[in-house]
Length: 303
Length: 127
Image (tube, rainbow over all chains, first blue to last red):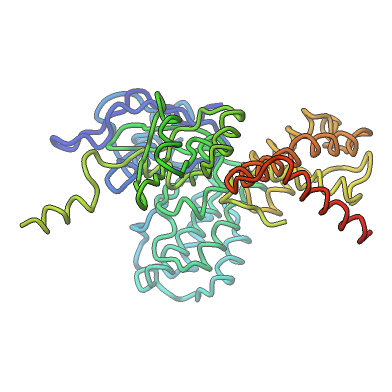
C-alpha cells in the first residue's frame, strides 16, 4: 500500500517555489531518508505531508487522504522537529502522559525506560532543556507515539555522537518490532544510511532521485589514475565530479553503468576503482552550477 | 564480522558472504535454520530489507531453501556450492590483482609463475 502519494506537488512562498512539481510515492512500512542541501525543500515537503502546511498546487495524499486539516491524518502521523510547541506549564513527565492520552498506539513503558536511559528528570521543563537534550526528548515522543506515519525532521540536531548512535539503534529496534512508515530528513546520511531502505533526494524544490539505498550505494564509482588511462573510459558516460591531482593524475566520480568485465579491464589498466559513498553521490548530484568555493576565493585573490 | 561500509561490496552481499562463511566453518549445518532478516538487521544495525536481500541472494543460489512461514534453512549442497563459487570469484579477483601489479612491475608471466611455485612449496612445508 502507498503511505504517501504526491503528484506535481508545488509550494510557492511569494515568488520563490519551495517545492516545484514533485512526483513522489512512498510505500508503507519503510524507513525513508530525505536528503538535500539547505533550502532544498525538505521541511516544506515534510510539513505538507503531515498536514501542517497547505500545498499551493498539485496533489498530495497520505493514507489516501489529503493531509491538510485532516483529523485522520493528524491522528495517524507525528511530525518531530527541533521547534516542538509543547505547553510550557507541563513538566517532561506530564508531557509523556499527554502523549499517551493523544496517540492510541503510544508505548508508555518504552517512553519511561528511554526517559530514564537518557537521564531526564520528572520535573524538568521542556524549555529549559539544552539543544541536544531537547532533541532527545522529542525523539522519545516520536518513537513512542508509534504512529503509522512517523516523521523526523533533522532529529539529531545538537545530540552528541553517543546519543545519536543510541537513537539510531532505538529507531531500528522499535521499527523491527513495530514496522511503520518512517520518514526522516538528515544531514548525517553516512551515520544513518544503513537504516534506510530508500532515499529521496531533493534539489532546489525538485525531486532529484528516489531509489533504494542499495542502488544508491552502487549509483556511482570512483576512478583514479593517469589521465591518459582514465579518459577513454569516460566517453559517453555521466561524469559527476572530476578532480585533477598531482601532475597527470585524475580522480573522477562517474555514474556506474559499467559491466564487471569493463571494471576488470580498468583495473588491469592500472586504474584504481573505488566505491562512492552515498553521501558523496548525493553531494555530487546536487552541486551548484559554476565553480565551487575555490572559485569564490580566486576572484578575491585576483583583486 | 564487521561490515565494510567503505568498500565496493554492497552490504547485502557482505551479509550473504558472512552466512556462507558460517556454513563453511560448520557453525551452520545442513538443515539448520538461518538467521531471519530481523535477527540479521538487529545484529548488524541495518535495515531489514537489506538483510532480506542478502538472504534472497542465498536462496537464488540454492545455498538456503525456504520453508514458507518458518524461515530459511541450509541446503544439502550448500557447502559444495559455496566452495565452487569462491573458487570462481574470490580467487579470480586475487589473481587479477596479481596480474595488474606484475604488469606495473614489468614482470613476465614466467616470473610470476616462478614466484607462485616457490610460495606454493613453502606454504606446503608448513602444513
